[in-house]
Image (cartoon, rainbow, N blue to C red):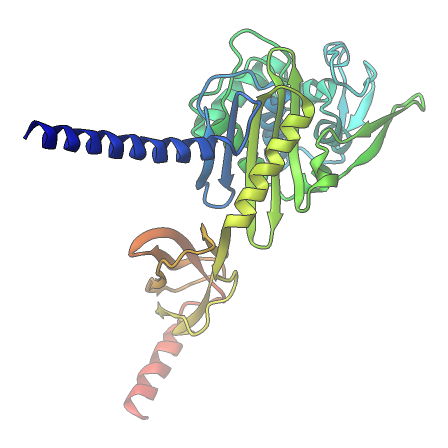
Length: 385
């Protein structure tokens, strides 16, 4: 009996050992996706679905990747009075920032487009402060706005102290939060006009020209990469947040604290290769197209009007995914008058019976309110007069 018990114990230990070996191999396989950095994050841009993470919420310095939030506020201000052609004055403070810069002249004026371009391409600290002072009056007030915007985006592991990313006590973020703010920046179409530029110049009033080269080398060397922000300080190490798009799938990848510049780019390539090889973004609803859907209008000259989706819908999933995807149209009964663009319901996308997305429907045409004579005419037609 003792021999039997001993045999069973050995078998159990053997199976346990095998089980832990399998789990350990899986974990090792995942961590082997990247190496040589402090933290990383990879996600689908549209849905925010996480694909890969490594120390994603650890508080770390992120160097010039702070400028992603600076750019978010710059592009948001374009809808609130700032124009790309506006001439922005440069203070002594902005001109004397040091670090990566385009050597702006104190007392000079530069158009906003050039300043934003120099931030995107050359990571210009002087341009960041000049834009911060234009938008908020001072860098200190601008940083307050940066932190408020971060909280609104759910970036709960981020604190900004300046708008440049220069080393400062109390300033930190994490790989997840960097992915969130880059994803927000990508919602501004004008940003891509600058992010895709490889080389350009900025001209000063005395005729001096500063040449700029994009610090994100992947826009030249990786298919589909068209956006991103690098960062480096001795404290933060080599950092990169980048985005690449192939077909319907746009991915966002973040690397913090790489040991050298090559490692940050190699790790980002590896994450992009992984997501594009294994995942897809299925188009389930086209923008402006919804055949056969008519919305009833009470009291309108048009009793039914066509509607359209406010945006397209995509479902992020693995390439071998077999999940059931369904779309359910929910139409509202509208009351006249109705103008094109008014809310008219929603299309709900379900994945395996669980709500995945909800796309607003909007009226595609007008329907004026019926007049008294229109109502009489309707009564007459209904009664066969």
